[in-house]
Image 1 (cartoon, helix red, strand yellow):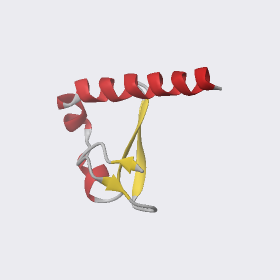
Image 2: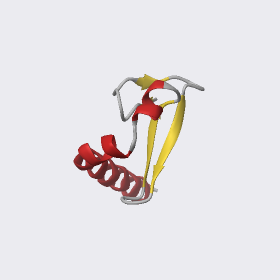
Image 3: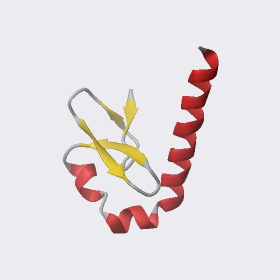
Image 4: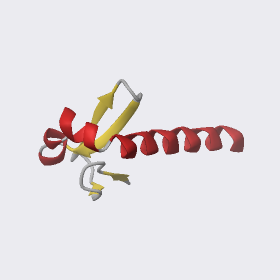
Length: 69
């Protein structure tokens, strides 16, 4: 189950969308309407540490999956 980056709640099937970022390169999941629309540039700037932490955790998890195979 995916978690919304904005509100932290679970995203059910067909309720979410990806908010792509270039720097750092990351795809953040958010609820389609309320949360995704609230994640503007100002919000992302204020939460840049969370964005980098999310990005680093995602890369670490991907590397672990490769090691397990």
